[in-house]
Length: 172
Length: 172
Image (cartoon, rainbow over all chains, first blue to last red):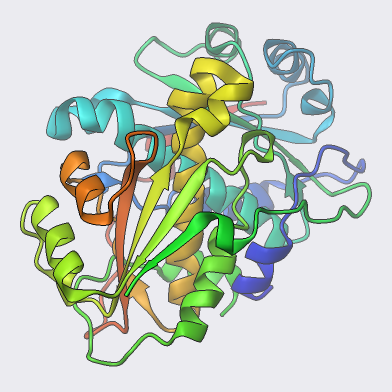
């Protein structure tokens, strides 16, 4: 799929068919994810690829009972590792870059999934401790996004956006 | 350009030709930017499109004398508006989602630029107050990324990444 088309037609997908997401497709998505830029190329991230149903249910519960999380064939949990950016960039690395870098990674995942006929949803509302417990991460590895991925069960329209006039300023 | 190819071949570009970036191309980039997802579709962002040389020089100075910022035909400054996410999501919206949403927007910009033969660099190291002064934003609008955009002056190789083994965990 063309890049601009992928960017403009991506939607949040919360209902999935039973079609599997193969390991090969997961590998394609992972390679797209780690191609994201990061401050100083520090790559302050970890990715958990969850197929285990019990763990997927724990993720759904930790995200306020968003059941569709457990219904996806595969769920990605993106975590930031603040110290890996902070060692070079101090508090700006820990509190800004590590969030930005993992968000760029998450956007790569959503765009790559859409481009190969899959879909997903960026879930940000969850209790970090419950998710960290579910995937068994230490305190230095902080979950920042849960992204269930699968084949979309039904087409969805792109949601409206504020107009460019509302958010863009030109300094010419 | 194919989406996966764009994701995998994007590099940081810090040297630009004198070729202009037309208003039409800027419009294409802006539409790609605002297609980014945001928590609750709150779109807590502002975009400044800077062509004015004096302002570009102020941006370069505020970013620790990164002169290439002033040498790009056009410079985008992406800002977050924490309160627009915080009104619904409280501190998580202000301190996490508003950063993630604007990072997804910035990644869309970099991918879209690359896909149409342009290039850019995500500049995160700068003094927020100096940048805010240069583009004249109130305290509620916080600059989070400066992205100079232009035609790449020379081809660049993709930088190395940690191996998937180092950053991925499978829970099957």
